[in-house]
Length: 241
Image (cartoon, rainbow, N blue to C red; front, side):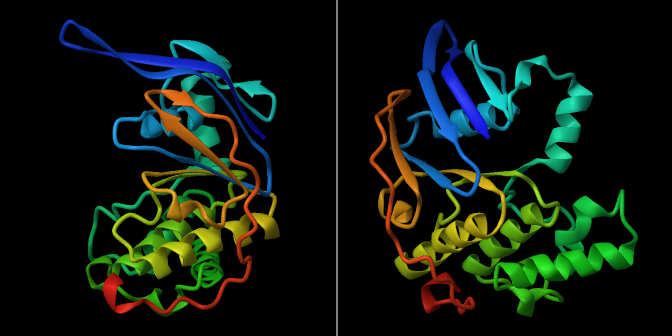
């Protein structure tokens, strides 16, 4: 589905060149969660942005279903982000008074009726176990519920690739494992691939493939993970409130 081939990226900080990625090669198949972990400033967010087509590598190439992203026009890239590649936005809606079913359905309002968009939004919330929050506002949600709503907001457009930057940030261990286990179950049920990043290894326990990123270099695969694939309905722990 997604293939990065010898991707490199550098930035300039004053007169100093900072190398964020060094010849990174990576594949994300459909129905798999591929996780990248590493310390702060390892290059994780840069890797995700390049994989999503939001940034262009200095060298190397990125292909999505055989199409090199650098060959697409700005309009084609925008269409790709609306339809096939979804970045999970964990910051919530800009208008804080929106009910969550409206926020989740926002990506659909340009092409569907409001009634159909709401139906799909409620279904997406139910898919991630957050249907109880359909009429809630962002400010009233516990941290784990916010993460699940953000996933629903990305999934509602039925993308083929999901990009997730540190999906379990700020959550306790139980809720972290729930979120990552949910991602695994979702991709195995649908023809979706997930590329996610996290600063810590425990968040990766339920993924299919784990890669370590350090100083811009991607280490060899750690092998498939055999975590529990069962997802239970979400109940926030006291630490996530």
